[in-house]
Image 1 (cartoon, rainbow, N blue to C red):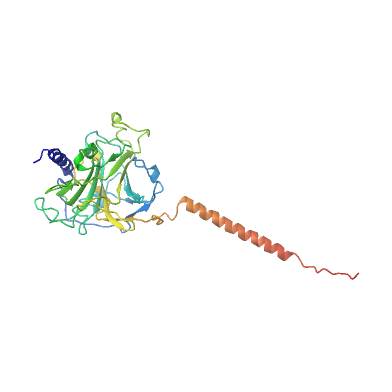
Image 2 (cartoon, rainbow, N blue to C red; image 1 turned 90 degrees about the horizontal axis):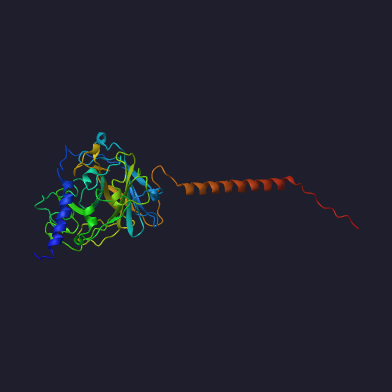
Length: 362
């Protein structure tokens, strides 16, 4: 083995081991069942220049989203829902990148250096045409036999954002797996999967590594209970008071199209739809979470439309925004006034009697 390759392999091993907890004890409690919400769907509108990737939700106010109940991924019963609230998922794109905002209510908890005692989120996308939501791709092969050939067509793309080593409001970005970036080790990880036990960080596989694979994700997070908006630094940890009521915000982005050559990244096309899911891990009652104990927005794929420019479809229950409503009212008032003025003119004309002019001869 070349000495130059040794550091790269060590980094890859650390990343894979760091993410392996997500598949530990991935056993369902009983027979799988799924009751879908037929209205569950989001639309990534073309809205360039709207959001800044800083974890704050202020610039997402006018962006429609969908509110999902969060239920255990392995046992999606209504009576086992995440008690603190639902997850709102919003998306948009600017023609180059796609942006996501995940917001979920939860008491503030943060334990520096311990991802399992902090909330984390994930996004999962269908890549292969045969890839199922259930069992993270659904390939039947075992960890010893799953590979790019035996599980071809069952690929799913996964982004996992753990915040135990990150600072709220600060931007974290993805890099090539081979450069040893600290950001990769912080917890903004790009992976692909064929099933829960056959998962790899992008650029790695059971047969070896590929140096061309990139983690193109960027992300930031925030909690609404924070009193400061001027910017935190590491010495400010834990950044807020434990147990404070509020909402977590996770803001993420990546290019619509990536330079993936290995069928490991989902590719977004304007005017088409992509299947996705979102998940939350939360340390309930202060207990550290484990990999399979996460909540998801649905028990199957959810559709996400990547809308072209000029297309707008209002979310259910929202027929127009304030500007559209104001414009309609102004137009209606103008129409009524014009009709009233016309009526007055016509009425006045009818009230004037005609008197012929007689010319007396000289």
